[in-house]
Image (cartoon, rainbow, N blue to C red; front, top):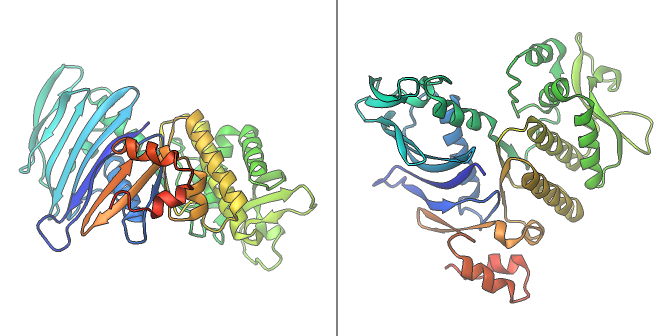
Length: 377
């Protein structure tokens, strides 16, 4: 597991106030709720928290208070980050109950130095984020541990195109592959796949083909290549690299731009999930609108595939949906049912409403009926 508990609020005491009340998370989480309840917003808020930890967000937010408990390598990390008007008002970190970082609104604070085994005071600018400035495996391994986890967290908008019409120039792709850290930017499927294949080779392709077969796509090959050779209308001076598959009943390669939208979305997600599994790193995958654009059978099979991978690998899933078929395919114990009253969102799940979830199972109704009920009104 990665996130164990999470809460967030912003713009307190103003008309823009919004709050997600404290909630526990599981290895697999299906976030459901009526339109405008806050499903996608919650995904965005969790992503913004990760962006602070991984250094993508270098400035303090205008407003926002995060209280998060992470479970990493059997250690419990409790973080509090509070921003207001572009200033860091509070920044604390405890590991297994021991306070290792304390920072105040004026930029003063203290942090533990492992080699000296003591806390040492510091003074930083009021808009500086200490966690980003203390990437030191020797002195602050607890900082690098949470930053490394945050770098692996990814947001996937399943209702988007996943960059289906986006090809990559060969020189640009070679430069990305040459990077030694093999960090995966999930905005470009071709780059993600190519970097993954460089590191993991044929076993990655075999895993992709196997999982695509589980979704009803029978393939004999998958890869990336210069699509100028397969798209006669593509007139470019340099090689343009894109994804392709070869279906079992076809001789020609099928370029990504000619795949059905559903097939390409499935392929992209299968590539992402397998690279996460092969990397063997604790990963948080946030998937908005899971199953969008897929038929019932493939959507159901995709959910089964994701849940199986999450249970067998060090992978935490947080998926949003208000689709009937998706809800009926995911066991209630994985549900996170959102209810909003005004600007406050509360999540109901097996952790805080165990009896209500257990009672419903004996009623013989579908999961979707639980969604439409007024159990938590």
